[in-house]
Image (cartoon, rainbow, N blue to C red; front, side, top):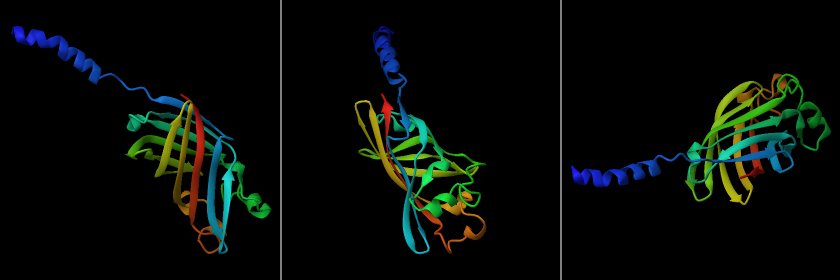
Length: 188
């Protein structure tokens, strides 16, 4: 019994060290600190655009990525492509319907480590009131008080009711859309 009592303090300290909660760093994302881009094909020609207004919070610790989470809100009326006809149509009912659905939301439930500085941001994307699970592959680099995230995701726009009426099929505008993320959040 004396031997057990000698090791009891060591066991308690070890238990406390192993059960210490981890605290992720909180980062704030604001428009102007990178690019949220999108790309597609219309009548056989590739086009690119970006979403100029977005914000959100990211809670992330590279030592415990699975405990991280994020919530990013995107102003859908801020979509531009540099083509006046397309830019005039995007906020309308057939496309983003930004009057009825002013924001898209990406909620990350966890980050899955893939090795090095690569992660999968696993969560839910909501566009036009339609929510779907998505996985966004990212590289995440932290330098001082800045977190830089970069990644690419392919989506099918019709899964989110983007492009209705004559635009439902891929006849004029391809159903596949690329989403590019290259943003910097601050905090730490």
